[in-house]
Length: 442
Image 1 (cartoon, rainbow, N blue to C red):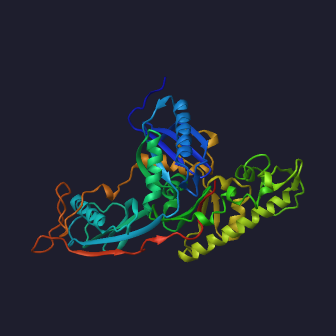
Image 2: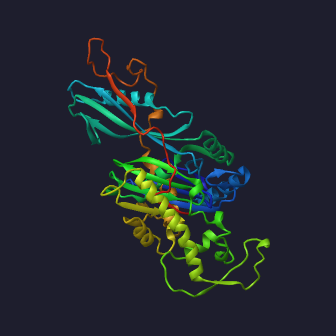
Image 3: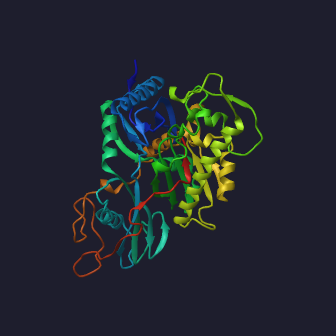
């Protein structure tokens, strides 16, 4: 009989277009995350990251979580859920206050963050994240902890990730229908970066992309926080099930998205090995014993990759990640297991490329240690750190005076009120309409 979950337990749930996976982890005495159990089921009710069949998806969620519970020997009640559907948009808002040269106190930071919360305008969307990405002192950016420093002006850059409300509500309803409490819904690109990027790679200019089973996402890393999060479900080259007619000869008695990473390659070579195939559907009319050469399969894969890398190049150019900026590309997801994909991407993009795998987890099963499970691991890391989110702050009054419980602002004029210098939206809800660079491919 499974025991009740202890305090500090973390359960991550990643509902993708090709698989539903769950992970139960717990913080160790040294702060490390120890994996207690994992579960996985095929996803049949999700298309392009959207819930298309509530009952089928709910059943997959139940089975994946129950499998993880059996391995861990623990019953869980709540989960941290990843959101990977289209419609994710990103924005950075800047708020700056006049301090008059005195030392920064905690009350100043609290009031600044409260004012930043009031500056958020999701424009009808649902806010998933509103986190302080970095602080500024007298125009100097990249300040991690301004507390105790002197400054004339104190500012903060707030990273806001929002999504269309209906897909998020459907995801929430599906999980709750499986009798699980939703602790929080996390944008999958944000979680993926936490799992795959080292501390050095979380510096400005690093690009992280996720190319999933039914979605296509990218993250630009800004000052150790995800600065932009993009999703393009319609341009995903990794969702091989959507292109079965193009890869029908690769379906050797199983789904194309399972076959390609095992027998496909990206780099050209003279390979005439024969591959037995089965028809995708009855109307295909392929008879038993049909075969194609491995070279033919490679040609199909290369065609898709050429299109995808073109989208990546366009996205990097649009985001001004050129020259010495953004030289590192990290590929994650099941599609990143495709043989030779990192070398191919490096040649196509002219940048350093590596495969991103979950790191920093103790007792992670080998089967879940690949790039396909980067988002799942990232959700656990996000839950463990539980970063500051401005949505949890109480609203601030219009005159700049914080509400009770959030301290007081510095007195810089005769009226005792703080002068708000700037509240600017510097990225105006940047839509992610191209391909990715921390690339997740299921």
